[in-house]
Image (tube, rainbow, N blue to C red; front, side, top):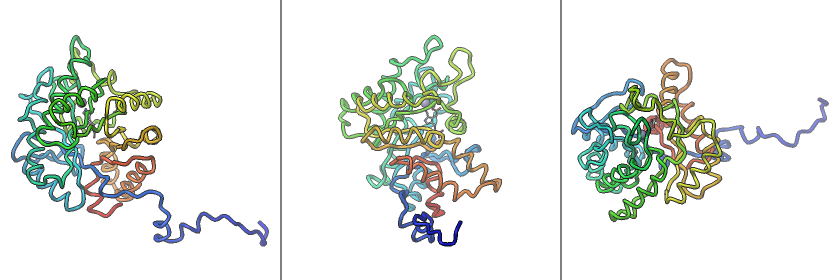
Length: 335
Ligand code: PBG
Ligand code: ZN
C-alpha cells in the first residue's frame, strides 16, 4: 500500500471507547423486558434446588414470594409461573390442571396479595405437568387428541385468571387453543386478561432440564407417543412458523412467543418482520444449563456470554426476553 493512500471509511472510529460504543449501540436490554420463570410447588413452604439448572429452585409459596420480592428490588417486574403437581394430582386427562387449589392459582394469589399491580404475573397453561403420561394434551388410543384437550386448557386458563393472573401463556401447541382460551376468558368476564401464545414452539432437545425440573417428560410407556413431535414444530421448518403466526393473530393472541431462542434467532427475526404484536423469546432451560455448565468449568465468561445472548435476542427483534439468567444478569450488572 503506497504511503499517500487515504482511507475514507473507517468503521473503527466509532469503536474507540466504551462511551462512543454505547452512544452508537443499536440495541439495549432493559430490566423492564425481562421475565423470570418460576417453578411452583403446591406447598406453603418448600425449597428444592434443581440439579440440572444451577441457581434455579422449586419454590413453595413463602419462598416464591420472598424470591420475587428480592427480584422486584432488582427491577424484574414480570414472572412466568409453572405449576408442579404431586403424583396424586396426576391423571390421564390432567384434570387437576383446572383446580383452584392447584400450585399455580395459589401461587398467583399469594403473589398478588403481596405485590398487587407492581408485579405482572404470567402463567404457563399446559397439561403436561398434570397428566400421568406427561403429554401436553389428552391421549386416546395412543394419540394426543387435539379437540378434547382444548376444553381442559381453557378451564386451566380461566382458573389462573380467577386467581389474579395478568397474562396466560398456552404452551401446549394444540390447534385452536388461543381461540378456545379467549372464548372461555371472555365468557368468564376476563376480556382484559391477555394471552401470550407460545406461537412458534419447536419440538426441542433444549427442554431437557425443564422436564426434569417440572417432572413433565413424556412417559416411556409404549401406550403413549415417546416424544412431542405430533404437536410441537419440526426444527427444520421456517415457513410453518409463518402459518402459526397467522393463526395465532387471527385467534386473538396478544403477544407472540418463539421458543427456544438461541438456535431459532432467524425465526425470531421472521416473526418480528411479520407481526405488529409484541414478540417474546424464551431462552429455554437447555440454553441456560449449557452456559452454566461451561461457566462452572471456567470455559466461558458467564457475564459476557449472557450479555451477548440477551443482546442477540434484542438484535433479532424480540421485545420480551424470558430467561432464567434474569436475576443474575441484573445482580451482576451484566447487561
Ligand atoms: C410445557 C413447557 C415446556 C417448556 C415450557 N413449557 C416443556 C415442553 O414443552 O416439553 C420448556 C421451558 C424450558 O425448557 O425452559 N409445555
Ligand atoms: Zn406441556
